[in-house]
Length: 131
Image 1 (cartoon, one colour):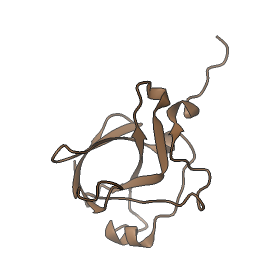
Image 2 (image 1 turned 120 degrees about the horizontal axis):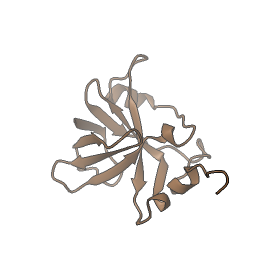
Image 3 (image 1 turned 180 degrees about the horizontal axis):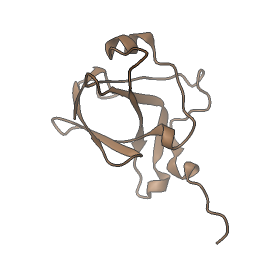
Image 4 (image 1 turned 90 degrees about the horizontal axis):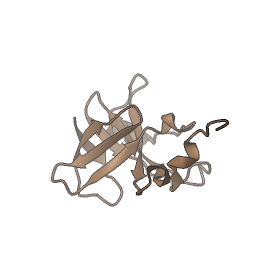
């Protein structure tokens, strides 16, 4: 599904539209139409408790209201070993499927001290008891 970026992805300010594709319940990916950008995303709610305030300007850009059903994802920096891949919880992407708009929000570590920019997937894998 194509999404118009109403607030740019950090470092990719020239990308105005992305193709969004769900891989499974946990992972998704976005690609720019010119194929210069490909990012793996993770649903943060599948990993941890995750909550933040959406800035009013983003609410307006994405035309959000109290009934909006948004989807939130965080960027994953893939490593050779998937469990060592890092998640950036401080720069979530918000997707509004109702009007196919999206935006990235830069959260402050001061406001969200429990969110990191390099948290590994392995830190969220539940260890099996016994062996």
